[in-house]
Amino acid sequence: MTDPVPRLPSLLEAVLSVGTDLELRATLQHIVDGAAELTGARCAALAMVDPKHESPVEIRTAGLAAGDRSPVGRTDDFLAVPIRVDDEVFGNLYLVDKPRGPFTDEDEQLLRVLASQAGIAIANARLYETARQRERWIEGAAAVTNALLTGEAAADALMTVAERARILADASAGVILQPTEEGGMEIVTASTPDDPGDLVGTMIEPGNPVLEQLLGGRPVFVEDSATDTRMTTRVRHRFGPSMLLPLQTAGRLIGTLALPRHRGGRPYTPVERLLATQFASQAAVALVLADTQQRRARLAVLEDRDRIARDLHDLVVQRLFATGMMLESAQRRTGGGDVHDTLGRAVDELQSTVQEVRTAIFALQQPPADAPTTFRGRVLRETAGAAALLGFQPSTRFTGAVENRVPEPVAAHLLTALRRALAATARRTGVSRVEVAVDATAELPDGRAGVRLTVYDDGTADEGTPGTTLTWQSPL
Image (cartoon, rainbow, N blue to C red; front, side):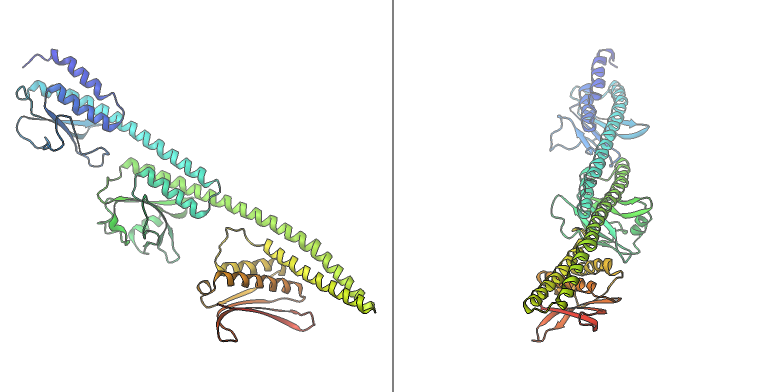
């Protein structure tokens, strides 16, 4: 055996080189380069045992061309030494083709020393990478919280969570699922580098074991969505490794954050699973805080509008009404025709002004602009606003597919007519019941299809008759 002392400087240099970089891939490359130089081998490779590690399966030195056969598995002039990290085999270091003769026992001893130091360097690099990952996820969660608390709308808030999580997890998609009335879950938001296609609207049907686990607040980790029998969605064949993480806080389940990778993609490591789960928990808290903040803002707007409406009603309407009463009294006492007509026009103008002010009061009492904007919802908002002045909730009935049949221009005119009718109803005395009906299947007198609005109240009309029915209609 050759005296090992002359080769100690080379060993020291190789040992020092494997610890010069904290990035895992660079550390692995230093290891194989140092092993080849230390033993004089033409080429070297490191094959990892655990496929969940982030680096490639093999790291080659410059001595092995891209088209050459891997040294792993060769039997001639071949040397292999395991690399252990924390008492577990991380991989095997392979050396082949030593030009100056076969590998010796000294080569093996030197390689084992290098492998021992390499295990320490790899452990340090993995710790560093874990710390970097944790830092990125923490920064991402903080960015999401900051974005949500700046007042984003609900749909934008969900997209913010999905997109940030997709980038952090290096996933092919980030999607948010929310519970449905039927007991399942539906994808409501999807973030992908490309067109999300038909991801939105995809359902997890009730009774699915994955769904039961998510509803119980437990995450689900899938090795391959395309082949896992628990995955039953119509888009499962597109994806491989996946994480499904409950968005839950204080026992309240907001939804699920799903992070699938492409088929054949790298499996999620235990560290990634832990960090993504923690991110989902913090995102759920941020979503709840943002929702609470928006509710408080809407409540403040409503309270302010309600105050303005009360001021208008208590001051302006009452004064106008009192002025109208005085003019009516003067009209009855005067005998001049011109004065009588003038007073009559003044009374009519005051009554019209009162009605317009009441209409403005109803508009002020409506929810903010980001409330539901469906036609049915807008009708219900108008009746809810009238309830504040009437002291009770009008009954509302819809006939036909009002959402699909009533176009926006007609809907706007109908809402204006409804607002005026409710304002007139609030002026009448003895009103204890109001009925609002919207019929999208009505037939107009000329035979055309139309929509008809009917507002009935049981109050006393201006001419003293009980009950009033106001009707508005328009062709569709």
